[in-house]
Length: 204
Image 1: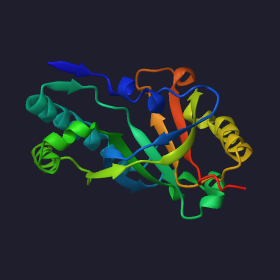
Image 2: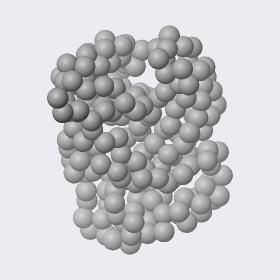
Image 3: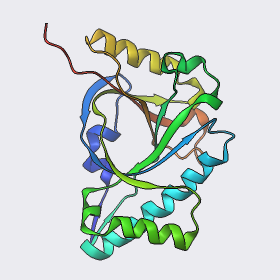
């Protein structure tokens, strides 16, 4: 049986440095759940998390049986935005919109992933409506933030300044990858990749 650490396979995408860099994120299969509201208070957020992980592990087991490859389940990720995106940081969290997701290896194409999701959702009575989609940010600037989620603002500002200095513009939705488990990690040691899609560079 082969064992694959996907964070190593996709090292460039899941080991960001403390200084911003540009990388390209190609489309890959993801489990995704949409929601809205303050993640600390709305039930939908917890329901999304508690639905994504059983499905991710069910797909892992199915791929292992079909191919002999046991891969690591990837970390939780989130896209964050608001209808009034220019005022996103000033808006109350109740106005936030989000998509939570877990990326999957291409090997899920070796199994009937849609059937596994439907069957596991029914058997486990999972509360959230999870979908399977191809997703990739394209060209992005990304950086590693170490510390509490509530203290991300300076890191985000530095990332945006890096984008501007590179001659590009912000495009797409703010993307976070949660490398640490907040249930087991002290807030000051939390590691989060912050990713910002950028518009293509226009030749002078």
